[in-house]
Every structure is written in structure tokens, then in C-alpha cells.
Amino acid sequence: MRSKNACRILALVTVAVLSAVTRSPAVAADWPQWGGGQYRNLVSREAGLPASFHPGRKKRDRLGFDPATTKNVRWMVRLGSENYSCPVVANGRVYIGTNDEDLDDERFAPTRGGVLMCLDEKTGSLIWRLVVPRLEIDRSKVSEDFDDMNLGICSTATVDGDRVYLVTNRCEVVCLDVAGMANGNDGPFTAEASFSVPEGAAPVEPADRDADILWRFDMIRDLPVFPHDAANCSILVVGDHLYMGTANGVYDGKVVLPTAASLIVLDKRSGKLLARDDGRISANVFHGQWSSPTLADVKGRKEVVFGGGDGLCHGFEQLSAKAVAGGQPATPTPAFLQPAALQPAILRETWSFDCNPPGYRERGGVKIDYWALVRGGPRTLDADGMLVSPNEVIGSPVVVGNRVYVGIGQDPVHGPGRGALSCIAIDGTGDIAKSGRVWQYTGIGRALSTVAVADGLVYAAEYAGKVHCLDAATGRLHWVHDTREEIWSSTLVADGKVWIGTRKSLVVLAAGLEKKVLADIKLGTPVWSIPCAANKTLFVASQKNLWAVEDQGEAP
View 1 (cartoon, rainbow, N blue to C red):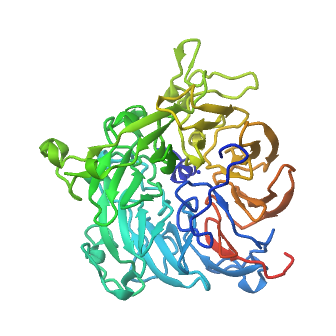
View 2: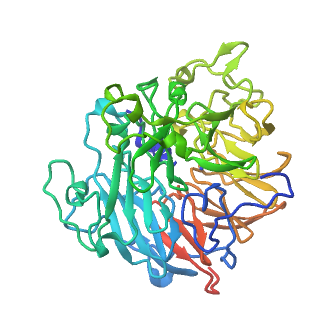
View 3: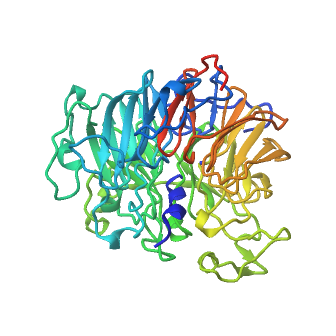
């Protein structure tokens, strides 16, 4: 079994030419999903955010800090002991995932499970929460490490109108009522009393401050898939359809289900399975799949861009109503027992791009064995002494205009190595490894992060601790800042500042051509999630706490 620290990141676990306008969330005031919007660009229009804040003096109590001693902080709340989900804000509420280690409800005993918290945006008070116990299932159906590390809910919630969509720590998709149980237990799913307790335990009748599950889709049992480490995909809503990654991966270096779905589509109203990819991604997965899908506009049509565990970036045609006809029931029987009319549609792949530059997959005509390297086999080093090997896509592809920006990396347990950041033109079809490459930057190490593209610049972080600023049109490097700490977070650009979490602190840099450090804020525990900015407030989560930061005219 791999170490707990090595596995945690996988829970996480991310521009056109200079004249293009950076895409921002549709509703500038809110930040309702991962990346703020469908294009996943971590850029906010918010202004008036303080360059620094004081989290409060440390205190030996449940909260861990003294609220009376904070500066530029409206409120803070305690999470669990682990946080990889990012805060999102919609319609006066904040949603964030954590684990159940600090669950202060005598009805539920901690089960090494997950919790989604719904908080009041102004006060931080709890409105409702979803409790998801640790997975109880035959370990032959999942990786031995899956849902066994007290990671909690790693997926970042997606808010769409009066619904919240989430992938739980049990690799299931749930649709939640934003009102929780306060307006009754709406269906068709009404078994919350049994859902929120371990299998075989006595049911716990839901109260007003509990979540209301409207429907549920179990990817492990109903597809099926073999998830590795954690299911942390954030759901993409396109019209009435939900797109999400399945977390299908390996066990002991081998793909257990090589034809399993990597990307699926559900009906957002019913949870009905409508479509899936053809299985070729899973057949070539190196390790696991932790990227979230992104929307793109290509020549007047919508496509879905997905970073695969095979190291490729894939473009899929948006699912059409015609393809949906005769889709799959929400709780299907095994595929081999189904008539063809009941099987899901197959998503049409329009293009693919290998994010691994030449020499990463093979050297001198000899294929580099990914798992042989992991197990200490012969290593290939470049001129700078960096390990060169195949990598997967972990962060989300970012779409700006007809360009995709995406990096590659590996689980930190595999050590440092050479990464790459690619800028891809997506106006072609088929294998666009050559025709689609606008530029490719190999001066970056392995990355777990999603980039931010703002004002013609790309801000990208690497696991080893460096933040790179490049020209979005040409890939020319402007500057590098070394935080000297591991980075599992991603760069957020807001109010002329670049925010990035590290193992030791939240680092604030000035956005622009000149490198300038504005603040280095210690929050007591690592900052693995990504902050978000909404309604003149910065929401920042450490492993144990969430702060709502606003400019109160105080000097930290």
C-alpha cells in the first residue's frame, strides 16, 4: 500500500493570442463551480481584495485560531482534518468538501468518510451538510488505497440553479437540493437515513441541517469502473447534461478494467446514463484519472475537452439529442445483458493531442516503462539531470478562445521529473499532435495544477514549488518564482494578484510582467485546495480551516 501522503494529491487533485479576451465566470459576482466557469480558467473579475490577511493567533481549541485576533477576515470555520475540495460560492452560500474527522454531530460517528458543507456566505454558519461514510465494498472492485486515507470529499461542487452536483468519496454522483432538508425530503431518492451511515448501521433520520439527495448514480457498481486513490472530478454542466471523469485506474501497475469508461454523461434531471467514451483512454491509463472536463467552442460548435490518464488531451463532440435517444437507465444491468437499444451512446472523439513531448514516452526507439521507473528501474535523465518519463494529465485543461492550456505530471510519490505545458489550437480534427501545437514549454517540472490565463499571460505552478509566468501567445518565459515548498494547489488570478497554496503557506504574487512577492501567509496546515474570489471576498481553505477574507482596512 502506498503512503498516505503520497496518495493525497491524487485527490486533488488543476488564451488565444494577446488580443483575446480572458473568459471569466458567467456571473462575475459568484464562483459556482471549479474554475469559476465552464472553461475552467482560474481568473476572477473581483477587485478590492486585500494583498494579505492575518488568520488569527493560534489557539488550543477546536477552531485552532483566535477569531478576535484576525485581520481582514470576516469569518472562519473549522473543516475536518483534510481538505482538497475548493470552495465555491453561489446565491449567498459557500460549498466545500472535507472529511468527517471533526464532525460535531452525535448522530454520526466518524467513519473516515466525507462531508460536504453548505455555509452562509455572510456569516459562515452551517446551513446543511452531506455526510458520506467510507466506502464499504469488496476491495477486488476498487484499488486497496481508494477511499481509505481519510481524504473526505475531494470533488469541488458544481452549483446549477437550485441543484448541487458532486462526486462523492465513494465514486458516486449525487444531485442535491440547495435548500437541504429544510423544505422536505424530495425524491426520487428518499433513503438519506441509510445513506449517511455505514452499511449495516442503524438508519439516522435526517434533520433540517442535513442534505437532501434528489438522485444518486454509483459509478463503481453501475458502470462499472475501478477507481484508483480518489474520485475528485468536478462535474461540468452543459445544458441538460453532466460530464464527468470516472477515476478508472490501475491496481499494482495494471489496468483492471481496460475497456471501462473514463468520461461519462448523465441527464442532470434524472441521473440517467446517456453516453460514455469508447474505452480507449482506460486501455492506456498510466496510473489514475483525476482531471475534470472543460467546455470549448470550436468553429461554432461546443466540444468537451478531457485530460486523460493516458497523457493525452481529448476533444469530444457535445452529445446530441439524437445520440441520446434510447440511453441507459440510472441503475443499469450489466452491459452484456442489455439489448443494444439500452446501452449508452458512445461519445464521438474529434481530436486528441499527446501532451508528452517527443522523448518522454520513448528514447532511441525504446519505450519507457512507466511502472518500471516507479519501482526503481533504469532511469532516463535529461541534460539538466531531470528524470524524463511519460506523464498523465492531472490538472484541468483551460480553454481561452480556440486555445487549450494544459500541463502534465505524476503522483508526488514518484518523485520530481520533467513536465511540460502545452498550448493547443483546437480548430483541427484527428491526431493534432503536430498541427495543433502552438507552443510547448518544457522548462517546467511535473505539475498537478491547473493554469490561469489573464491579460496575455499564463501562470503555471509545478509540484516542486516553482510558479512560472509565460506569454500566452508564444510561450516565452517572463519569470519564475520559487516558493521552495511543494505545490499541490493551482494559481488563482484576482485583483491584479496571483494566489497560490503551498505546503507551508498561501503565497501572494503581483500579476504582470514583473515578479513581485506581496505576501506569504502561514495558515497552520498546508493549502492544497485553490482559493476562490466572489463578491469582494477571497475564500481560502487550509487543511483544517476556511477563511472569508475581505478588505477591512487593516494592516496584517
